[in-house]
Length: 276
Image (cartoon, rainbow, N blue to C red; front, side, top):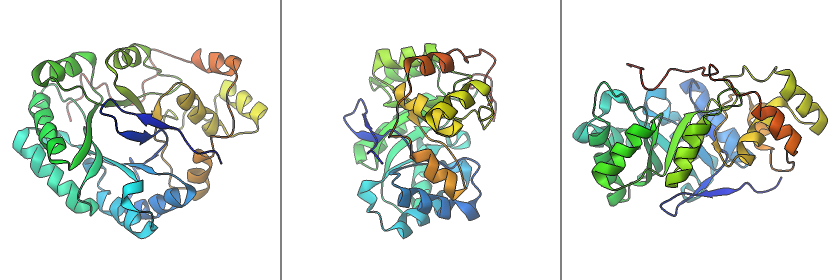
């Protein structure tokens, strides 16, 4: 299995391009899933306070035998904890649950524009970065206007924006905006919450390459320079989803998948109107 690529973030830190996402992974399955992933070669784990599995993710890392310094660990600030002081408290609580004294990446999970606290929260993240407890800081589900406000108010550009992104919802405008500012794009729900696994176009490409549809989709993210965090609790799928470095997609394959883009392809909430 070829070693995966590392993405250089705009603060100079290196981030593995493929990671394990644990959204909707039950707490009683998260420790095992993380252990399976690390044994398979993953070195990037993505969780969040609201997933309610940080403690189990931390236990999986501790039990794996993989040195903490080899693992890129992300967690996120939930909307209810936005604000300067409350963000600092929430971060401390996340660290305690994870059983670590730092995270590699801390994200504001949603802009929650109706709360209008994301700029104050960003200033808290800057403090955490200065202290070295959040090695890198970024955002999730932010639009260009919210990102520009953070930069205008603090002079600091997020290293990354994690957004819903998959072949049916390719977010080309946001990706171009990120690229113009040196912001990495990370894809959540990269398989379209499983809706793409039976797509005939992807199925045909998978058959030609002798790969699974999930492997083809993950490879599409890789070849587009995206950071990708497929989620699974099934050991065989966790392993298969990481076995994506020994093949490439042809130009015709990339074009065919590119043609699946659909303005109505979003599967999750619209970040600009979500009120949770």
